[in-house]
Length: 279
Image (cartoon, rainbow, N blue to C red; front, side):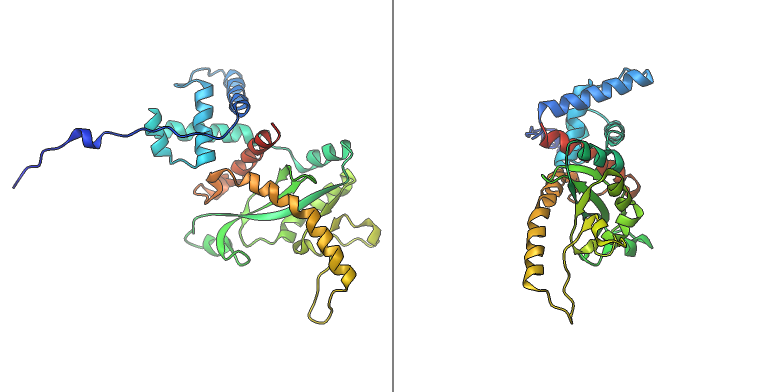
């Protein structure tokens, strides 16, 4: 039996730096939020200052760094970093607006319409009965469905709870009572044909969700209807900008967290997205 000489210098961990593209104001906001929380619970001690914790959590969310790698490079246990992440996500999610309040603010600023759409956040394929529920036939992949409201410029206002990927946009809209919230705020909404039939008032003038016209096998669209659809699509384009800003957080490239925590995560990222876009 031969013995090989071990080269300890070859197995030493290598730590490198990379740029985190978030603003200083975002880091300061998270640090102040954590300081206020620690003061409230009477636990001022952490092994790292609040500003450093904020940077580590943002690296996890923005760059989707592996917990083990980031913890090893920062000199903190993996379990501690996971606890900091969950703590910060919970604090940020609590700051996310509710639909009624978000719509009232738009109405108070003189707004007339909002944009509504659904999106799929990819997830790992799950085993058991949840496998079929999370598969989206529209996108042909597994994921979680979220509904979002934005203003006319694409700024995110509200995001719904996580639902199985097979959930239809119209179903999610009914469950969240979006039509009622819009009527209470006196606002209208522009949506795609996936929301067709959600709002069915007796008087057509009372329609609050505008979806455009849908062609059928026996009824083709007139030139005027096609033009109306093009105008509606152009007005709705900004909602995709809102989703693009949200999905710039690379942790959403493929969720590896428990689906039960996905709602908190998305609402925390909503707050961070607005801090980044509106700075």
